[in-house]
Image 1 (tube, rainbow, N blue to C red):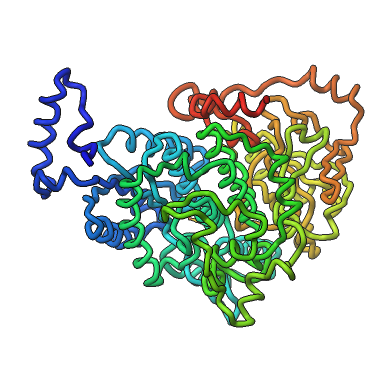
Image 2 (cartoon, rainbow, N blue to C red; image 1 turned 90 degrees about the vertical axis):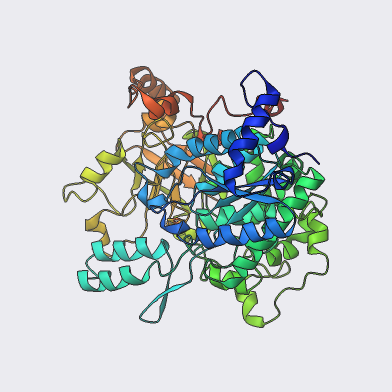
Length: 573
Ligand code: FES
């Protein structure tokens, strides 16, 4: 084959000269000109020194390069935007689409024949899958893997579930400064992404279940030597994918997304994955209505006992067999003929697979015959308060609150909430419903992870650990509580959340899938007439572009001009 390095011209108006020039300039890359006729494999690296979840990427890159070279390709690493979740303000989600554009355009612009997508922290994985879906050249994802378990006084610690839990305990006065500091030291003990089933772990699981990552790659902890081996194998496989010409659009089919959603539901994954999967599918013209997530959630058993919805963490999940063990259990429910980056189908990948046998592993990954629960980890809600839907993780919520009616206590923005939540004069009781609005994709902007509204301090001190909370923003996949998120349409575009007043009654019924504002339509109409759209936050730059073009949560929060036009046609069929 003739690779793109030798054939993909630049724009000097003379294709022959362009190749001549490239040849001269590439001599300093250290490869012989003959080598550059081999498949050129880009390694799209989201590493930066500010992104702590990616600290080990340099050794992974070396392993991928070895694999590429052994298979007869030439590896060339290139950087894209790095989004470290806790180091990116106001929220990494604001920049997911920018990262996706960076990935797509650099894959398309450079003379590479295939690409290894190296991601890890929350938004990097969906951003790369979105970009690769649009660029559509042979691609394999390799995530960096989760951190090892933390431990404090014999208790396993998980970032960031325990970050939140112990901070809440500190606010309640039950953990002092000295103990908090000792816990802080142990919360994030190694390289890798958050080690509970948060957004990073979830997106890795989905990428593997959809066939974009080698079997077993999602769960191996970052410091485990098996990650180096799978990185090398990834390098070998991308060369073979280039030879086969197998592209993301042939792997991430509608059936593959169904497999991904089944895996998401079975592992009790992050609610953020709902937004990301819709966005990735949107790049390929595949509509994923929230009703599909609901339907698949109702028919997918809950198998993985992982925090924040369960008890164990990713290190235990990897020992219990990781994603292949989950897919093995789910086999009767999956599309087994979908193609994967191994060049084989999902069914062929699972042929002959044997789960780790020790009884203790069944406590981490249950069987199809004896699941933890009959339905999946994410439930969808709708009603007059969320006409286009909202999400909740019932397994990470308080059972007693899943059917609940309470008075609304409304916060108009994240800043308003921060200012008033601990005010001793705040009129709030444990049975009230905390509402946060103007925190959605347009409203914040960027839909921050503020949905786990802190319990007001005075209630925390009375021993209240959970309340019903509703917002148009997101929450971290590592967070927990009776938290309703992604209310769509959001308040900033005139969704019903904008019309709630303090004291209105809100009814939640998770088993029935409903979220209702108990206010008459006549009253709501009068409030709607008085409502004024908030002004844009920015007059220039990327944030202004974001505010003008971001889509709502049920459309994946992608930019309107990046979604494949076919998806809207498909959706209206
Ligand atoms: Fe990077 Fe949690 S901060 S995955």
